[in-house]
Image 1 (cartoon, rainbow, N blue to C red):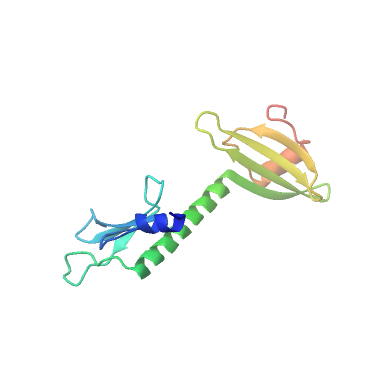
Image 2: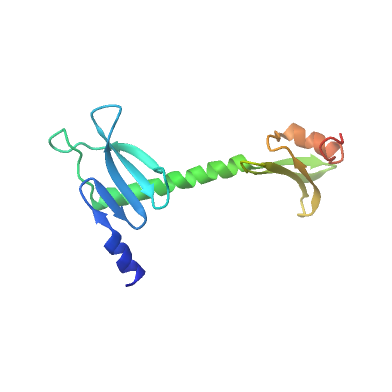
Length: 163
């Protein structure tokens, strides 16, 4: 059986549960009030990527059934949430600052390697032409600012503890 046919066979299209193309939309009771919510979970993930309010049906007691249009919109929105989360995480783990050293532009970068047991970070100085000026290991909680980058460059790019 082809992969596409297997996916189609594994798809579920019920009023309050759709599972298709690696995504599950599940309408759930909103614990905060009398309304309903929808949770979007990607296959292989333990937690939903997106939880949001869901529309009441005509009887004002039960949820409106899921449909193709709503499911596709929810998948698109969940992808966007995941993309923003990944961008936010990347921004937390990498930072670039541009400074001027002896009349030349230098980029100072902080790259954090998250690891539950042994997190680390690297501070790198790169010249305008792309050549490496310095690369040192620093604490993962190192605070990179324009002032700290300038001090590091002005001191000759010392290793931590040398300055």
